[in-house]
Image (tube, rainbow over all chains, first blue to last red; front, side, top):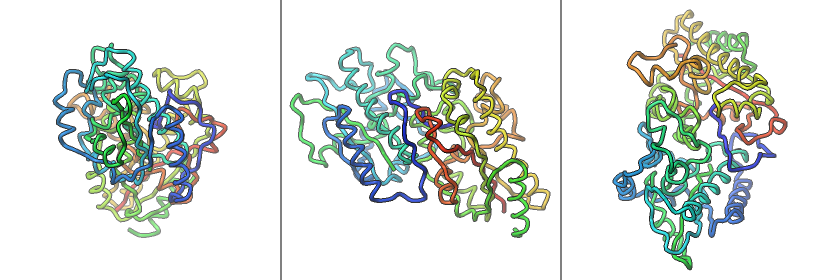
Length: 214
Length: 214
């Protein structure tokens, strides 16, 4: 019963059969549609990227690990037995997007985020990631996996005393909403944005999200 | 291993409840690091709560090492009606931990037990034929079918090991085996099923298992 479940998104009215190989034309069409959907849902920019465009940076992960006031199972990502870089690089394509934040928004790192307006901005990134992930899954890209921003505990479990799955044997209380962030997986979203020549936005603050599609 | 013995095992899978079964070279088992990642993004409700499920269970490298020791495998499928496996009440039951009144969680658990049973029966029959080395993989998690009434997974939470080592198995997907793609390459129709799909839109559901034999 390990299938993906979602709460942010509506019912999937079309479910595609899993194919033995990806149809390149259909894949391109789907990637374009996913970018459009990200924009329609509130992203400022969204592009289809190659898995090779995902930049991993050990300094990002060190920063996340040292920001340990509000630890969660996703901050830093608990992935002890396997190699996250190997997994991400096994994808062909992803959708990289950004959402505009509020002027004067600080870098919250692992959180907590007390400002509800700011929290809502991060919430938007999780919402888009979840929607894209669910859509991709039912398009037949069954391994689609999304990465959001900051620490999901700061967004969804700010009032909880602890992140439950950090206790051995306990499950996440918001499994359908929480996602690991790009930085918690060691990804350098700022460098990726620079590599794509994304210009700064007017109010100066952006939040990044990533969906690895297939 | 003799072809006639493999055929007996394949037929054995069909006789004991599989609706399809094929003999494949072990080299056709698709191991992909993204599959274990997918168990955690979004977090499956059993992720972290069962000793056989990510981030626990076999690492990708361990599975590669296991599969490389075998020449052949029997890959089988148990068909499940979509109004059971994609039922809305099922997902509410999963989220609440309480069986649904429609009986879908109960029925689906029966199908999962069938997959474990077929895999174990095939292993036993292979051993009776003189093939002492076998390795079985089932579907989903083992905690729901065998330890639903227990407060925790004993293998994970204590040093006493699994309560049901004779019947329990790691699942294909929790071990990083891309069972969806293997089904598609075998020519079996398979659809992504999750909490957002509508049963009428999904032609069928499948649970699959694999038994490696030397």
